[in-house]
Amino acid sequence: MNTETMSLRKALGQKKLLDKQIKAMMSEKFVTSESAQTAVIDGLPLNAWQDEVKANYQSLNDKIRRREALAVAIMDANVNNFVELPRFITLDEENIGTEKVSFAGAIARKAYYTNELSYIVNELRQKVTNATEQFDFINDLCERTIRDRMAQEFGTVNNASAKSREERETTLRKQYEAVFYDPADIVKKAKLAKERIENYLEEIDAILGNATEMTTITVTY
Figure 1 (tube, rainbow, N blue to C red):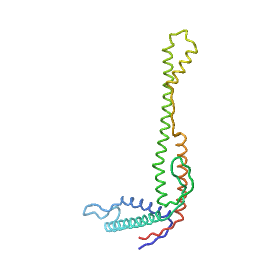
Figure 2: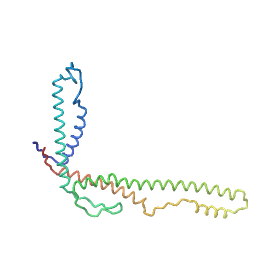
Figure 3: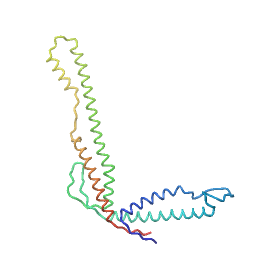
Figure 4: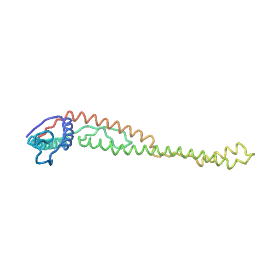
């Protein structure tokens, strides 16, 4: 039985490295079919190659065993150790005070903010972009419509006063011009929410990074 003591951050790095090494070992030739006359495989005498395969398979199992022990120790540490994080309730509310959250809770929150919450904010900002483009399109159409209507209504009228033309153009503009509706103040709030989420994620990273460096775990396998 082996026992190792290390920082949680190192354990996370070791588990990631083992995952990479285990995956890489799948390129090894664990079994093969050759002619009965074959004496050399992959540059090794047959007996030496067979011994190497056995050693590689044993190494694979050793890595899996250590990786699983690390995973269990990491999970236990993530559940039983805590950090103080700023409160973050909604997109609009300011961070007020802090709350005690397990490492696991902080990691889950980071994932939620990175994926789902950031997606929501980006979608809101995209809706603002789409509405702005629609606003510009409607205004362009408005100008074309006004030109066409003015030409139709006054093109053959020589005695129409400038005032009549101006009043008619004003009426048409009020009828066809674009109106940008933002009842929930999304233009402003989505931009601020994006900044708050980015700052919050940076803070979580810093807090978790320091905590995992300072937390020691023991791995037995």
